[in-house]
Every structure is written in C-alpha cells, then in structure tokens.
Image (cartoon, rainbow, N blue to C red; front, top):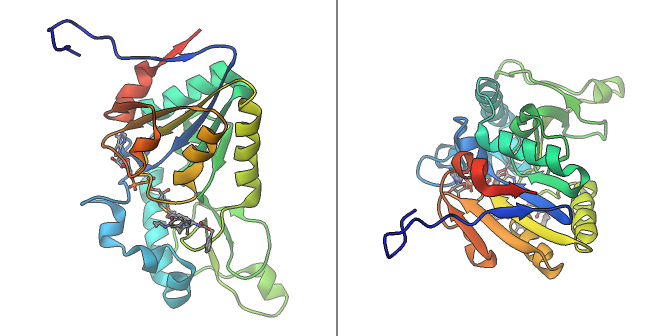
Amino acid sequence: MLGATGGLIAMQKLVIDGNTWLFALTGAGVSAESGIPTFRGSDGLWENHPVERVASPEGFRDDPALVWRFYSERRKAAKSVAPNPGHVALAKLEEAMGDRFLLGTQNVDGLHTRAGSTRVVEMHGSLWKTKCSSCRRAPFDDAEVYDEGHLPACSTCDEHGHFALLRPDIVWFGEMLATENLARIDRFLSDGAKHRLVFLAIGTSGAVHPAATLVDLARARGAETWLVNLEPPANAQRFENTRTGASGEILQTLFDIR
Ligand code: BV8
C-alpha cells in the first residue's frame, strides 16, 4: 500500500506468540469466495427467500416443503464447492496454536471442517444434520435432498404412534443457540483472559445476535479486537484493528506466527 508520501507502508500483522489465545468468529463472507452467497445485501440469500418464511419455526410450521426446498438447494450448492484460502489459513492457524485457538462459525456449510479445522463451534447448526421437529432424538448426519413429494418423517415418533416431520438442524430466528456451544465459547474467553486474548471477526455483518455481541464479551475480558471484512459491518466501531477486503486474500498474509 502507498502512504501519503508515496512510500510503501507494510500492513500491520497480527502477531501470534506462545502466550496468544485467539477466538475467531466467522460469517457468510468467509464462504463467499467459495461461491456460496451471503445473506444480506442486494444479491444475498434473504433477498429472494424471506427470512421469516424459510428460517423460523413459524415458517416451517406454515410451509415445511418450502423450507426443505430452501435447505435442499443449499445442501446441493454447498456440496459442489470447495474451501477457499480463507478457510485454509484458519485451519493452518489452528494447527500452529492448538488448544489456544477456537473457531466459532455462524456458517452452516461445513467448509471450515472440510478445510481441516477441528476446534469448531457451529453456532447456528449444520446443513449436514437433521433432527426431529418434535421429539428429542439426537440430530443425525444427513446430506439428503428432499423434494416436495418426499418430506421426511421421524421414525422414532412413528414408533410411538404419532407423526412428526424431520427438520434441518439449524438455529432459526427466535430459537436459542445450544447452551453447550455458548458455554464452550465463554470458557475459552475466560481461559484466554489469563493470557493475551485476541478476538478476530471475519466476513460477518454483525447484524445477528448473540454472535454480534461476542466482541463485547471478549472486550470485557480484555481482548484485543481485529476485524477482516469486505465492508464495515454494523458493529465495526467495536474493533480496534480493521482490515478491509476479501478474507481469502487477507487471511493468507495477516498472521505473524512466532
Ligand atoms: C436467540 C439460519 C435467544 C441459518 C440464521 C439482540 C438484539 C436484537 C435482536 C436480537 C437480540 N438477541 C436476539 C435477537 C433476535 C435475533 C436477531 O439477531 N435478530 C437480528 C436480525 C435483529 N436472534 C435470534 O433469534 C437468535 N436466537 O437470540 O435466542 C432468544 C430466543 C427467543 C427470544 C429471545 C431470545 C438466533 C439467530 C439465528 C440465526 N440464524 N439463519 C441458515 O440458514 O444459514 S442467521 C444468518 O445470519 C446466517 O445463519 C448467518 O450465520 C447469520 C449472520 O450473517 P452473516 O454471516 O454475518 O452474513 P451476512 O450476509 O449478513 O454478512 C456477510 C458479511 O460478509 C458482509 O458484511 C459482507 O461485507 C462480508 N463479506 C462478503 N464477502 C466477503 C466478506 N468479507 C470478507 N471477505 C469476503 N470475500
């Protein structure tokens, strides 16, 4: 980058030393360079699929076929793409940091895991799991594409003599995030606060809670805050260090691992 005097300015790196604990929060922007559309914005997913109809318990109750069509299309799309350099950079960072790294993702596409990340909290669920809309049976792996003529029913409920539809294992609007997931993040931030704690948000609009408020939780624990995003998100002023641009490019050179 050129400075005011025409000289070259080196972009500030995020130094990772043996005392650094890093929590990374990712959103749809990280998968954009893999070809998965983001949610908000002019060509975002919510533009053609009203969020209250496809991503809420009420929407599922009113029109389960529409909801399954929406998630089936997304399963098809996610299956046909690959992790990008942004996913890979985070997987490599985890490899270097081990238990001092935790990734909380709002994405449901599974691309972080496919890139090699293992310390991952899927805060909004997974496109690759299905659960019952009624009983408490455990969510199970499922990559099936359901069309309108074939809406899946719960076999456990069937054994007990009643009918219930299966649904995607996704946290919809108005639903609680899994308490064990929030507790794992909270525990990591508490442990990290005894060291140098870094909170890094990547590719997220900061519009959806409670994910958008995690930065405040981290700041309250003394975290240094970093943001990598294509454009300033809703909570941009909460971050001390900002890098504007595509995550697949920036993440490849952001870290200085010592
Ligand atoms: C809950 C389904 C308790 C998954 C999704 C406090 C204040 C206000 C409202 C609330 C609040 N607390 C709770 C709420 C209500 C609600 C909420 O947040 N509403 C908002 C919208 C006002 N939250 C909830 O309901 C949550 N539950 O709090 O439970 C409760 C319960 C009942 C009653 C009271 C309390 C549940 C939230 C569940 C969200 N689930 N969808 C799916 O189908 O995938 S949300 C959806 O948004 C996605 O899942 C996604 O994960 C999430 C966040 O979006 P982003 O990932 O940020 O994507 P977005 O498109 O917005 O932005 C992309 C960004 O990337 C952009 O900034 C862009 O510039 C950038 N970008 C693009 N390309 C790149 C890039 N950056 C870098 N590189 C690039 N290449």
